Length: 173
Image (tube, rainbow, N blue to C red; front, side, top):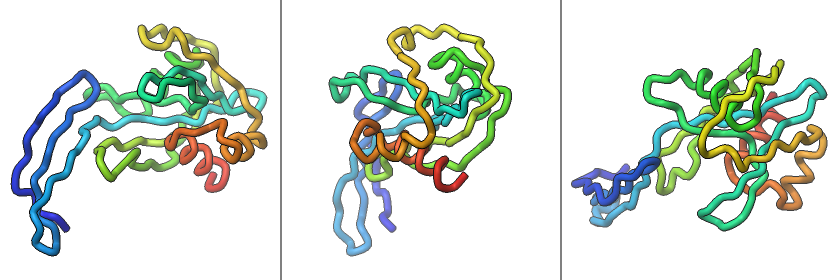
């Protein structure tokens, strides 16, 4: 275990905060840790009436390209994670799930970030779009369940939350 001696907030943005912690390691060395603070989020594996998984394709500025992902998003203050699933799915895919089942969760990048993702399966989808300002460019891509391992293996699905969420769904569900 490390002991935190001090914390200095160096940036507070809309989605993240960045702090520097000064710590003492187990072997008594003093060093710093850069930590990205991020609120908890949801990630969802939506299953349509044809048993396809609805993925979303969207441009990611940080890496400068489009990614094929499972829908995900932030949890509003005071919002239940399952309610966030319904809201985010409506915003990103245009569907409201009648059935939402928790499937565990995971940390996105625990080496430097606090973000925890609650994972869900959503099914019995009914069309019911909810417009959000940052979702206009998202494209919904239905994918047959048996194609997912190949898409991951050949690098067509590259982000960690999608890989973790899809593999957990495929092999632990």
